[in-house]
Length: 113
Length: 112
Image (cartoon, rainbow over all chains, first blue to last red; front, top):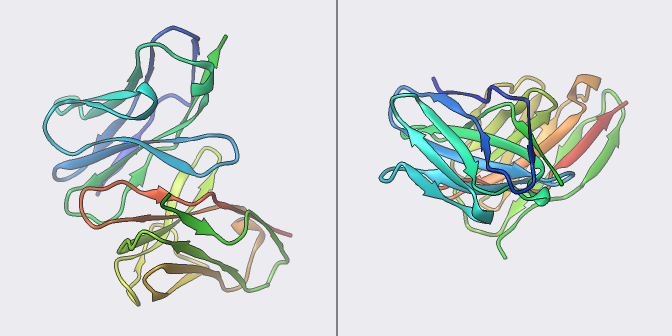
């Protein structure tokens, strides 16, 4: 079985400050890990993924994520937040042998000017 | 630009109606998925398909069925709509392998 936890419903940061959105996962094998973003009244957009290799992966819009196998975490980060980053963020995991992804409940990020 | 297109953005249907939600992708992806999104519950998988005429139940298939007669089209069917099926429905597709999903814009269904 595979599962994802996003422990924070909401994250608030000031523009220009670094941001972190947390995600932990559980899989029986090796994980594929993903982050998606959803802007208001839109579908989800792919941000980045971890498959193998470097633990720090870079994605769209200046976001990056750090894979930590010992802590089973895949936190999303950005060095300097923008107001336009305000959105709903979803972490997802897929066991390497599975066809479907399991999503977390989502974290609402609000960046204030 | 690659796309997943859902036929309706908003739908209002009556209890007991049979409802069809259509999804078309133009990327020649093998895999297609239907999720529903509800506040505080994230995305829950209803059904998915690996290939034409193939389907697999997801986590919440009750009250739904699907059809995939052509590779590019994946239809979700609510056999007899109920108010607890009021939700945002998201279609997604992906290429086989270590790829992420491409999502459609969603259909917000209200059952009255």
